[in-house]
Picture: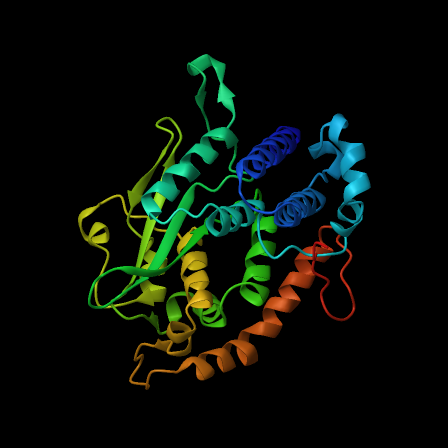
Length: 330
């Protein structure tokens, strides 16, 4: 248990250091950089707080930076105990890079993420200083992007990225999934995840494509992989991923990278979002968006809230009586 705790601390130290390096090279305004730095720090401190054994914010911050950070953003050190994040640290990093790096080609963007991942993995001097798995505490091993293409020219009109649920431990992962389903993902996506394999899939036009990549630490790159079998059942169009047909090493379990990328695509494409429907299922008519959201709200939302409260109470998090408190950097 102490070994796992030390791995999480090491991963948090590396993540903060790497993210500061990314901020130092960006063209984003100082205000935007400060906002995202606060979000990353709060998410890491929160995950440390709900870890067992608990990890203090000070454990993630070098002594030379603590005084400056406490002066610039003192609320983070306390609000990690009372306010929820909406995303994991890596999801925040991914959002920042996608919005501020101005990289149009997804392959170039994936290559940039591979360089980031290489910096986030510990080095093992016994095998020639190659990166090795850092228990995936804050590093996403799976990345996906979803895009909406012009039906005539095949040109990408919108693109959105997603990452695997990068946090360590079963309970923190369950907590972050419930936060995402309730307060981050598009509600049609949340509905599909809650129903899992028992639901009619969410249908997309052929212009929507999703591609998934797995990080290969020894090669320091992302390799294209087929979508997981869960996602193929949850999200459908008429053109299956050819890799799912030809690649025998199919991913059986969802990483939620595809889920986040599809949700983000719906969020940035109102026309696509408003026409979301389910497939025909058990001789029932397809549902439109309003019907999908209604079922999620009436059948699953309160259950998720109750589960989230129970999980947070088990980790000494201050659960409010009324509405949730979310961290909002100012």
